[in-house]
Length: 204
Image 1 (cartoon, rainbow, N blue to C red):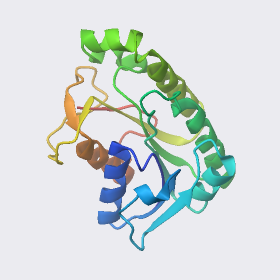
Image 2 (image 1 turned 60 degrees about the vertical axis):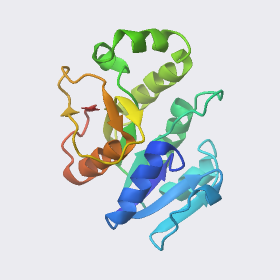
Image 3 (image 1 turned 90 degrees about the horizontal axis):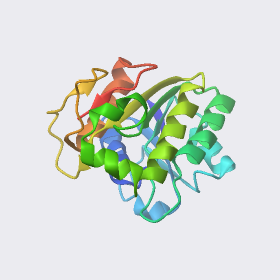
Image 4 (image 1 turned 45 degrees about the vertical axis):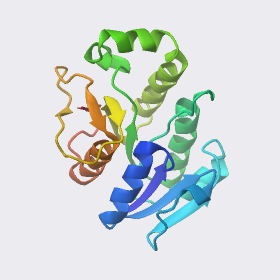
């Protein structure tokens, strides 16, 4: 499948990139610094640019069959999730690309009660801007009219892929630790299976 990937230089996004290439997908990834993408293969195309650059985003989306959005905010930077997603959605609608999988976080929207008390405190303090951006991001996706799935992971780690995780829309799934590699595994399985179209499954 031909995929457009946003957030490929982040921890989870890079796992999505590596696993997508391993599975034989063709990936076009947007990156401010293309040199950070070291997994250069024939099936990887890198578009240089910022997610707020509508022309660069349109080039990345053009010709794709699905879009994977794993946007994250660098420490100390202004949150990019909502503004960047708005540009991606416009590019998808313009190009007629309907399938979107976006990674946000447990604690967003109706998953607030699935996170522990200490994380709720973090959401109200130093994570407040990022979580507000993710809330807006999800609202934009839900209103897009596209075939979307929102993936909400728990606390991310750099552990190797285990495939030992829970997923689904059951509110009993709590925000435990999960490897970024396992989040990527779930994202790509959802790409194949389309089990959660117009839903926001947790993965933890």
